Image (cartoon, rainbow, N blue to C red; front, top):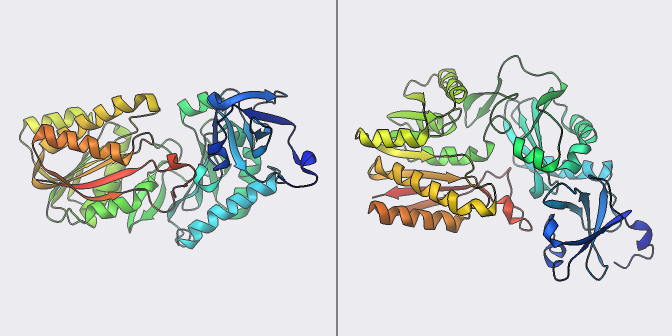
Length: 406
């Protein structure tokens, strides 16, 4: 950098990269893994601001340090003159909220949207979801978790919510050293479920204990897209959670009948309540292990015109991708076994380490084993409030393939 006072702009501690490791970070990738780090001097506290420098000592970016995490530094700014202070985070939050406002996702008082999507909004380690007047915040990076009081106050100032919930992911929190617990941390919570409207359907959301932050907002547009293939068909929705795909198939897809299955009794209770809330009588829900349920349905000779698969994350690390693909293969093979000829398979993966190409090769294996031709009609991703950052392609985690199985 050519600033005359560059030295005075540097942070107290610097993280020096190993030789030939700098290119991704000049390219603005936000994660500095421990394997890329040569030395840290002086050793900062976890959560402290540090500067990332090349092995030649050139400033690259500024971020937050965590000695306990495999992601040793999360990067936020590539400007040597930019402190990571309250005003910096206010600007990032304002930009993220402006995107969703431009998409019309703040217009509806009882609407729901992802307002902050971590790396894609330049706020690695922070997710903020809006459910009507409530916010659900998920922290996956220690540095931002330590700054949560400031972030909470900024969110209150910018959005005037009725209440803010913190939600944690146990494995991520322990890996990062985050000590926050699931709780209502500001304002008031709803009496019972929070109610939102998505695609003209009403859903009750468990903000305190529901999966993720309470709902899978990333599938908003995929639920409608899948519904278009359900007219007068018998539909099976596996891993149905609170009924997102099933209710869209029943209401907007004009399905003949819909069966939703999930292993969680809580999810099934919520799904039944949501069906009743929308006056839908052509949909029912059952609690069962999804793999075993598919095997049983096949053994009983049951057939469906549409099968929807939206399983949980099978690959939590790069090393588990092969095991995950075997699980996806088995699941999709079982689904094809209950699909009538010309039926529609909607198959999803939310594992970031599993690529679109991985999904297509997995489906190729299923086609070979089942001797059924599989045609991919649509290959979809997450809704626009979950943008993909081209400098962090790991943010393209959701794949939704809509296929015809002959």
